[in-house]
Image (cartoon, rainbow, N blue to C red):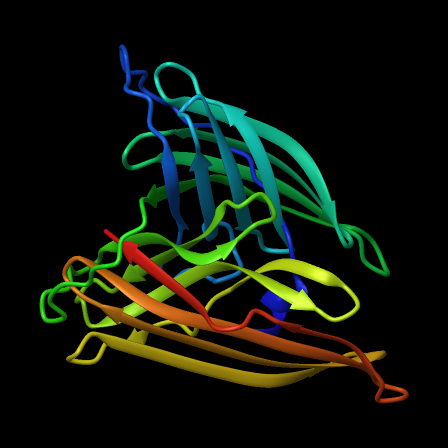
Length: 285
């Protein structure tokens, strides 16, 4: 809800024990996914992230990722060389608004990319800085997939990984990850990266989560809409979020949108208005 909209941007780090292949085939193309924790865990704790990857030639990979911690989130972009066995590594630091994120990403570029991400956040506040971390967050990614399959045969407890039709400034797709309940009857949690266009502020990277434990209908459909107002001492923020999915035995497709506006509390004058527009996405197991 409002908390994930106020926090924008992040970065990541990780340590992954990767088993090198002798002479791996070079992999190229686009992939999207992330990592998503069960709904029994707090949504704003380590374990949730979105990632997109693009490799034109298999020799290097462009990455865009958003990772969530208890006190902050961060978004980073990086380009990493890909070794002969498909492994890659990126590390660095980014500062967005009041948050500095130090990250380390490790992965294997394959037909089903996998890896880990670790991040440490430092967020400046009016009192004293807050620090937190998201360590060894496991992620997976898949190629674009547009099928759904049988809505009556959704794999219980499964994870889906995919990408939306939004891209970062370098053209890398933004990721989405979803988790099905152990009984296959609900979408326990989903997370996706979002880019919004903001008046007077260009574009803003952030992330969103629909409500936990959304019931899956007999036709495989899921939907959620949230809106609200957040008041601080100086501003009033209003937001509207929409999410929809159709899930089946082979994958899922859907849409999301995020819109928010900020006004000065003293004068009522609008500071900015941000919109993602209606974004389509697809994911597979």
